[in-house]
Length: 310
View 1 (cartoon, helix red, strand yellow):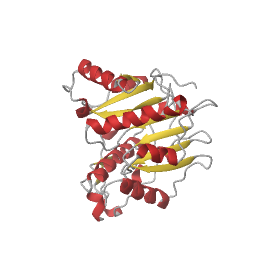
View 2 (cartoon, one colour):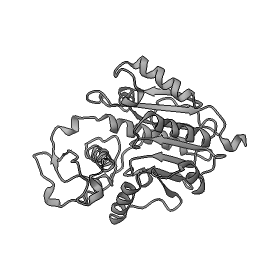
View 3 (cartoon, helix red, strand yellow):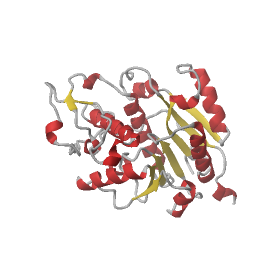
View 4 (cartoon, helix red, strand yellow):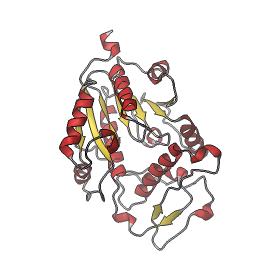
């Protein structure tokens, strides 16, 4: 299995000329225009008027989808998400300054996209992809996956159901040669359900953590335990962690690095923090505006999975 901890050499993919689907779940009259054709999106505290859509999980997911939509509209986007507009909130405004902005989340998204494409390509590439998401992640639809790739989406059930319906309404489809399976966040045993749905710990996999609702350190440790149990030695676990989870002084890199090393190594992972500005520079972009509330990371699994041992 050829999957070691990778250097930051982005898998450069020229953004294709893709038609952006902007069919929001809200009335078109709510989309307000400004002088230049760029959208400034501010996610409100609701996703829709239905009762469940004021839940914080929906709010966070819509905010991230809005960032992806805005990025897709830049003249030189880091990536194109043709489906993010399906989840756009009602108060869209065109903003002439957006083209000069770069959001940390978008830099992290591009970095994760590149690592996924790199890790899954070729005969020996990982064909099992586990995404811990907010339920509105569109990678299963927008990335060009190799044949026979199985994408497991672990996310909140209600958000995933709503997003799936919107994607179906606009004609989004998974590649025929691939499979997209959902594992509800609310499952009593996510690890067992993953296995029940076909995950095989004796085959290469890659794991991503971005947007997944998490409330405390204990919950993240459960995720680490699950990944460590199921992932083969050498597999990658990467993504974004909220800074507050590190329980260290914000802005003190050495303190965060020490915390990350201790937590990840206790579950058999060698972790590396990735600088957003470093990624942006490698992509030929200016640094992202402001400080990030997240830590971008890549971790290599150093232990054998339960399948390999047993």
